[in-house]
Structure formats: structure tokens, C-alpha cells
Length: 362
Figure (cartoon, rainbow, N blue to C red):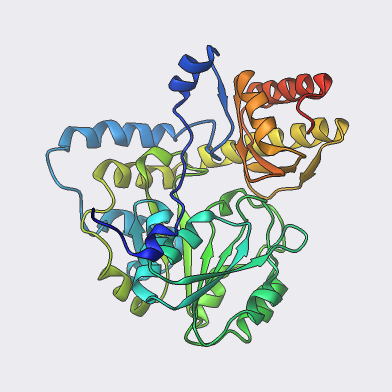
């Protein structure tokens, strides 16, 4: 039997949720509400949908392997040269590309715990070691992460806002981190949810990059832009860093429909504003209702809420029977995506029903 290397076999495979249609069939639940994957409940911009229809007429042709027009659109939006941009099949792929570019077996990467699971998965697959530093007050403990950087450290990951807690780190914390981080460590700042952030002290990661720090900033069209199914992400860094990553990037890694949709999505400021407004309204409603029920939740700067419970899997199973899909995050925490008003109330009503029965204890 063919066997993968031991370091690969130690990595737990990512477990996706079942399709909504399959859950309907298995549980007999009609019109379940999916609040598990941090998707934009409004869907894509109408401009993006028009671009998708047009691009679909040329599917016999390979996509633009360099993403020229999307890079130019991002260049105009960000005010940087297109040579500072790399495209990925979602920001997930860019995490993997960065790790495979800059790490070899035995190297280390520092990250928070809990945070986005793909960081540790990608590091493990390369034979590297994920040095995981516990959150402090549900936020990245940047001083402790800095202290964990050693001679074998090649990368340091920061999710800001953090997934799954929705919390952020602030400007002064970034200043202290970057004042002492070694030159041979690449700091990866994952900003998948940046468009939802409203806190005035949120740091401008581009500033550190333009000051010459070794930074890779990751962003995506999967969240607020509503294009999760098309898998388009992008990275921003020094051309010298990206030139090395381009050696690892697979040809045609972003498809033609995704590129076309992303370009038009960038133009639709009205859809972006509406998406933010829907999220803020849903956040306020959920805060109010969860507080009234005495639930233990963490305030968020993203489009999801992290809740501490006694038994995450039991709560997940109970809500699933009511047609509400959330994400269990281990033994005593769940993550709930902020949806449309009706979806949020359906979650609240189902949660109230579970609390009323007292089974399971949450």
C-alpha cells in the first residue's frame, strides 16, 4: 500500500459540513437556515452576477493565468503597483502557497489558538511545526507570540479579525510587534473580514508593508463580496516575496468567471454598504437577544459571533433538528454567522426552545 509521509498522516483532514439539500433529506427539515460558514446572506453584487453571465459564454477558453485585469482593478483600489499583488483560489490557497514557498520540514510557524485551522494544517503538511499560542481575552496575545519566535521560526500568522472569535488586535500592538520581529520571519496578516470592521483603532497593515516590513496581507472575495463559491482571494506583499510565491503558484489557479465577478464586485459600493448595514443590524439584534437569554458571547468585528456553551456538539445537534445550522468549535464553543433578519430570529427562536427544554444543557 502506498503511504504518505508521517508528517502528512498526522494532519487532520478538514471536515466540511454536509450540503443543505442532504440535511433536508436526512432530517426531514424544510428550508434549513445555514449560519455556519460566514457567508454574505445577501449573495453577490448584481454587477457581479451580470459579469458571471457574460464570462460564462467563453468557458471553452483558459482563464487569464496572470489575472491582469483583476490585478489592475485591485491596484487602482489599493493605490499600489500590480506587482505587489498575487491571486489565489481563495485566500486558503495563498496560505498554502506561502507555507510551501518559505518553510521546509523542521521549520516553525507561530500562530494563535484557536484561530483559522488552515494555518496549522498547511504547516503540518510541509513537515513544519505549528507553535500555537493561546488567545488572551479571546484576542491574539501578540507579546506572547513574539516571545515564541525562535531560530527555527519562518512565519507568524495573525488573523485580524480572528476566526472564530471575531476579535481584533490594535495599532499599538502591531507597532510593538513590528518593532522587534526578526527580518527573516514573514508576518502573514489574514484580513478576510476587514470590510466588516468598524473599530477606529484597527491597524492599517499596508503601512507596515510600505515601511519595508516583511508582511504578506491576505484578503478575499468570499466574505462580504459574496463570491465564496468562485474562490478568489488575493495577497499583497513586496514584489520580491511574491516573485518567490509565483514559482509555487499553479497555473490558472483563479478561474475566468471568478476574475470577472471580482472586478465588478469591487465597483459596487452600494452593495458593499448594504452588506455592512445588514450585518450591523443583525449583530445588534443578536447581541440584544443573546444578552436577554444570559448567553456567554464575544463581541465581534466580523460577520459571526462566538459563543461559549457547556456542550457545543449537543447544541449543534439540537439546533440542526430545528433546521438551524451553526458551527461547533470544539467542546465548549460554537460560531454563528450573522444572517438576514428572518434567519437570525429563526436561530434565536430555536435557541430559546432548546433552553426551555433544558436538554441539552448549554
